[in-house]
Length: 265
Image (cartoon, rainbow, N blue to C red; front, side, top):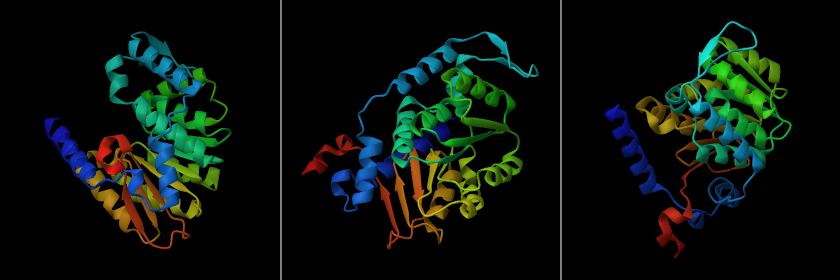
C-alpha cells in the first residue's frame, strides 16, 4: 500500500512540474476544454442528488436483495470508499459530458454507479452501456442509477470485459464518448478495440491512469499511437482525441490556474 501511495505521489509531482495552466495554452480548443474541466464553477442539482446517494450508501450497513433475487449485498461504507470516484472528478466528468453532448456513451467499470450518474446527468439523452465484471458492484450501481431515475438510459451489463465489450460495441455501433474507469492498465487494448466504432469527434477518457506502473506505460503507448492527434492530461482524468483536424500531434498536461498563480504573469 505504501509503495503505491509513494508511486502515485511521485507521478503527481512529475505531472505538476511539467503542467501548464490555461494561460500558457496557445490552442483555443485546449484552452476551452481546460476551462470546462478545471474552471467551471457552475453548480447543478445533479451534484447534490448524486452526493446524497453517496452519503446514504456510505452510511448504510443494511443488507438488501436486488430485484432479480439472486444477490444479497452488504453496502458497507469502507467498501464504497474503495470503489468510487470522488466528487471533484465526478463534476469534471459531468461538465465534460455536458460539453461534448454525446449521443452514445460506453463506460468500462461502473464505480458503483457514481460515475454513471455524473456522466448521464451531464449527457442529456445519451444512450449508455456500462460494463462491470463484479456482480456485487454492478448490483449497487443498478440501485443507485435507479434511485436517480437514469435506469431507462443506462444499461449495466455484467461479465468479463473480454465478453461484454464486443457485444456493447456491436449494440451501440458508434461511440461518441468512452470512459474507462476499471482495468486502466489495459487502456491500449480498450482503445484499439473501440477505434473501429469511433469517429473524428470521439472523446476517450481514462480515470487515474497514472496510479500504477502499468497504467503509466499504457498512457505513454496511447500517446504514441498512430491515430492519436491530441492528448490532454488533467491527472485525475486523461483525455485522448483522434481528430485529424489537429494537424500536429500534441500532448498537454494542465492544472488549474490557481495551482500556479505565478503563471498569471
